[in-house]
Image (cartoon, rainbow, N blue to C red):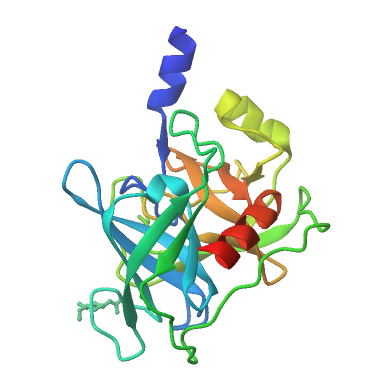
Length: 248
Ligand SMILES: *[C@@H]1O[C@H](CO)[C@@H](O)[C@H](O)[C@H]1NC(C)=O
């Protein structure tokens, strides 16, 4: 029991105002036109940020732990501290966290946001494709993640979009580190523990892009900002995503 409690104090869900990209670089503006910047208010009344990505003109996919009130999505952004002409700011009409999402272990950490209106497709705003149901990422695959999350565990938040290249790890790496909070059927273990690169507070909900498709969603990180972290396995939720988009 004591061991479990100690472990939990070292973990934090990335959306809880804590994730940011560590060891990454500022991207070329609008080179990831599917990226969504999500702002919301938590139970504590404070503002938090998460990432997400456009999967349909009126739907953004993110992590379920990014749930809050007054949710608002900014598309087409690079520097979120200014009002860029490319930006489309759209309030969330309704949030659909996965029915199996469990905040105690962050399993099924996936949520669809229906936007109040359709995004206008531009050079800076485009959808990201979902993974094929029969293609799975493997340890050693090199993928990318982007976000406006913290760039160091001390908490500095960038105002421009950062990205980092990360390598998919064996499930055992995350089973060892996250214990029961890692389920290989619905999660992917990402980030080489020997390299100082990771997603962190504020990056939650952003896409892990492998071969130009959204293979994962940033979910859990370690509080010290070290790799690996856990990512929701999007291919395990394809039928739920398609059903929700069709019927809501
Ligand atoms: C983003 O915009 C703010 C406000 O104009 C500016 O102070 C800041 O330097 C910009 N950030 C970058 C990295 O260009």
